[in-house]
Every structure is written in C-alpha cells, then in structure tokens.
Image (tube, rainbow, N blue to C red; front, side):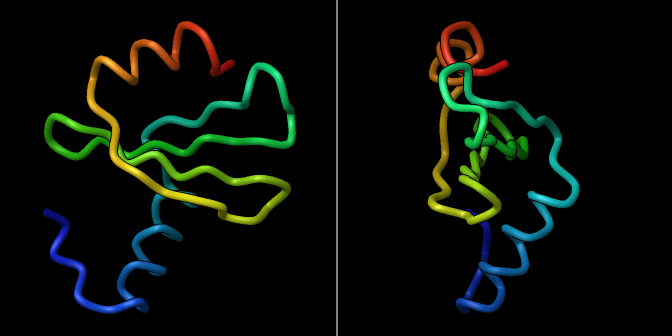
Length: 74
C-alpha cells in the first residue's frame, strides 16, 4: 500500500508523519501519549508516541477514527 521497501524508508516515513501530521491528538487518560495521524486514501496511519518514543504505528479505518476521536483523543 505504501510502497516502502526497507526499514530506513519506514523510519523516514514515520518521521514525516510525526513532523508533519495531518492531525495530532493527546490521549484523554494519559497526557504522555500522543497520536499522529496521516490520511492515506480511505484510511489513516496512526503513529503512537509515548514520552517522545514511537511505540507503534498502524492503519485505522474511518469507523475506528470516529470511535477514537469521540472517546479517546483530545
């Protein structure tokens, strides 16, 4: 989907998402957790950062986005 072929390309792409996200949120329950989102066609890439460390990145659909936006993200 993203056409990333190496660990370096993945790292560079995630760095771009963090430095220039389409949207950024803070966790409603833990202020040390931040969510950086990049819109990719009909999905979002969600990069989760805890205390300045990237801990995971995954794709979410519009339904999950709406759920998290209403219940989890500030």
